Amino acid sequence: SRVRAVLGVELTVRAVFDAPTPAAMAALLDDGSADRDAFGVLLPLRRAGARPPLFCLPPIAGTSWRYAGLLRALDPDVPLYALQSRGLTGQRPLPATMPQLLDDYAGLIRSVQPEGPYHLVGWSFGGNLAHGLAARMAAEGDRVALLAILDAYPAEPGRRGRTDRRTLLADMFREYATVYDGGDVQVPPDDPALRAGVVDYLGRGRSELRYLDPEQRSCVLDVMLNNAAIALADEPPRYPGDMVLVVAGRSRKDWATPESWKALVQGDIRVHEVDARHEDLMDPGSVEQICAVLRAELPVAAERGAR
Image (tube, rainbow, N blue to C red; front, side):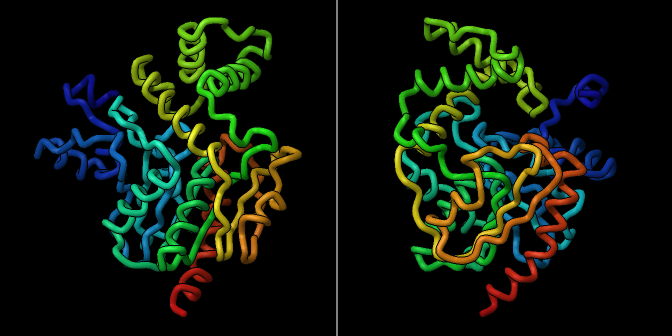
């Protein structure tokens, strides 16, 4: 915002990732390439590095900017790429099914790394995507050496198949009302008011969505509803390999347990707990704990991938 105010340049988040030092930023501003799309489906956070890249799948809102926090503590020789949802700026059509969405992500990953072994990370809904993508890639003959899921779980019992958009929107409103208004706000009876209420709530939290205007948050809401609907439409596949599960110790729920993954993972599930809330996993202190887990698991993945 200071660069915009002082220099009159519209600087995107993507440009900050591409040029993280003052000298690099000055060069980027000089050559006019500072306007790259921060809402692009493939977001390179760090291209350089001799080790296999880490690919991060997006949370339910579709934006993956907060994965940049991993750069603080991840081995600098590991390239880092984030995937984001299509439709964040209103593009249509949105993916209609989970297989369609996963095919898209698999193609983007292969455009960076044509052959495995692959390393996948997913936080929240991104963990469900990473699990589905790992199963799909494995079924297609690709090797997935690391599947790391950050506090994500299969759908809560009873929610599978609940894909009606009005129902999903009302569920979101109730969840946000509980967080921000103590649950004392009634669900608006008409769709426009309900949608406007959720769009308002999306701007109140600590996430990157607070920097977006209502029109942009409305596009994000469409992405969220679409992601939720396609995720709840079908049972997830069974993944034939091992999984690393990072549990947010301060956000435990009765139904969200490591055991809930057992029917969907054929191999071992290695569980690590971090002292954090779910929504704070990309904050500096939590990132240090997560990267310690990744530093321990990546050599294991490299050995597995070499077999």
